[in-house]
Length: 227
Image (cartoon, one colour):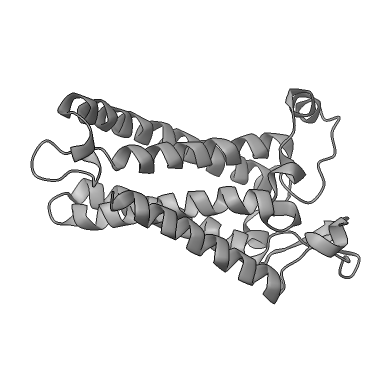
């Protein structure tokens, strides 16, 4: 099956390309909002930790969905469309690589790093404890020492997440201000101006596929949490 039939469609008027589908945009902003909410509820502590746990389950669901969508989603969301090897990364850094409308090779590394970091944060939270009265739903399945180690990883990984988010925001500012390349607006509208390439599919069938994969991810997380 060719790209136009599966993940991409005929390009809209010259210079405007639909790059980010609605599922990708909703994932992006929902993950950002949940990350902030998770940090706030963790810092408040007390009864807010209940919401912190629920937020963590939601983050884990989103990460699993994004992995599935990276395998079976629309054209520019698929890992095969933007993840490149070291040669492409160094070529891009030397200015010898034209990435096209989607993620560039360095941006792809940022996406993978953020997904991995969010997964580690949500997964370790399932086993973590606050040494007072709250613990993750799977903490009872491991020893106290193991729970404490995973809690330490959870706390240290939070700092790594801050660093990755900081780099992500710095990169956005650099491209917006220095390169004059819009990154924020396309993540809202889904479209980029002054680009060439096929538009990604964003029709009802593709959105239904996203909903099914989201429900699959949610079911998996629900199953794990209830173990």
